[in-house]
Each structure stands twice: as C-alpha cells, then as structure tokens.
Image (cartoon, rainbow, N blue to C red; front, side, top):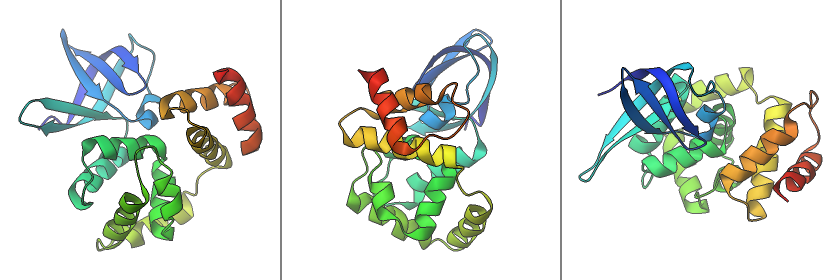
Length: 201
C-alpha cells in the first residue's frame, strides 16, 4: 500500500493532480476539499494516498489531510453501495466537520443534496455510520468543538443552491470561491449565490 507521495506538484485540476516523484508522474483523483489546499503547480507537495486495485486498473486517490482519507475509507468500507467514486463525491460536497455534524444530527436532507448522492444513499450513510461503535459519540464531541465557521457554512449552502439550479459541482464551487475572494466578511448565502451567478454568466 502506498501511504503518501512527496514530490513536486506537476499538474492540478479540481478533481485530479499529478505529482512528480523523482521523475515519475503519479496521477491521483482528489476531492475538491483537498484541491483548495494545494500549493501552486511547481511547488513541493506531500499528499496522503489510498490505492484502489481493480481488475482493469490501479487507481490512486489523494488527500491533503488524514481526516479526509479516514472518512473516504470509512465510507467505502462501512456503507453499503458506496464505492471510491461516490466517497470522493461526498468529500467534495461537504467539509469534514459539516459531514460529521450531519451524520450525528441525522440530517439526511443535507447529505442527499450532495451531487450524486440520493435520499436512499444518504439514509444508508447516516444509519450505517451511526451504528459504528464510538463513531457517533466521537463525532458529536468533535462537532461541538469544531462547528463549521459561518463563512464555510455560507460557501457550502451557496454551492448546493447552484447545484440545485443545474450547475456542475466543480464549476459551482469555483464560482463561489471566486465570489468570496477579496471579501473579508461573510456575505449572506443569497448574496453569495447572486455574485456566483454573475461569475458563471
């Protein structure tokens, strides 16, 4: 198992990157949350990894934090019907803290609004993760201490609003992030959606 890769960031797109490790380019699929924390291409980078071996391919998934990788593995190993692609979509659609808080609160509606996740899958996620001994209690304590910041909450809600209007998750995320650039305060979600729509137009 490849635990991590350390090298130079050769290419970076919202859903995939290439890391040059001593002349070998490793292609990885990443969640949007990890993309947000990447340095500029050409910079040194260390990415935590998970290798999925299929009959037709070996696929590397990359993460900027241990928490993201842990959740990715938890979703794949403990939630019926969730594979690597859907686990990555869940990580892209919600911050770690917000996802944990949603599971603890049993907020199926919030999880089902993530692109690619329907109501039935959201119900399974909540049911099967809550049933794991210690997970819900641990997350509940963490959620109380690490409640999502208002800015993160507004950004998340604006992205979901744009997805519901028919925009793709990647373009919605990019537009909302751009709308927040240079804005030190936390604009209301409606204002953020309006600014993002201008950018998308």
